[in-house]
Amino acid sequence: MAEADRDWKKEVVALMSNPDQARAVGLPSYETVLRNSDAGGASLVSMIAAWRVAKRVGMLSSGQFDEVCRSQSRLLRTEIACCADPDLSAGFQDMLAEYDIEAANARQSLLSTISRFGNGDAHFSGR
Image 1 (cartoon, rainbow, N blue to C red):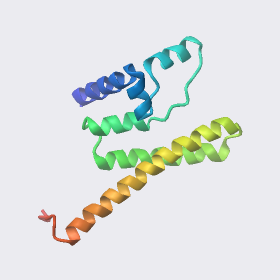
Image 2 (cartoon, rainbow, N blue to C red):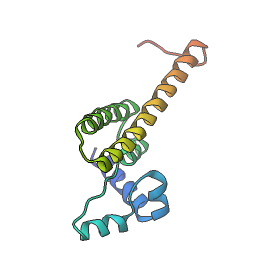
Image 3 (cartoon, rainbow, N blue to C red):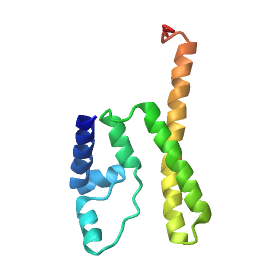
């Protein structure tokens, strides 16, 4: 687990070190994080990109990734419901949309797998 954690952190840092790659996966660049931290500010950044990296490096299984996404969606819906700041609420809604897209992709993948089983393209041993 420690090795998977190191791989995950290494991959996230590598993505953040290149501003174009960071932007492409939805992470802030390293420079942006430093700029905000030096000013004592915070960034409203979704963790979805970091969870995607964790899945890609094998730290999270597909099922665990799906559970994290569902959990984050519930938390975001709760925050949106009680948020009085329109700008903050809009940021939360943008994040929720990202998690909803992941959930839809996971459902589509599951339906494709079920379809393959139904067509006899895959085999299940039942053990």
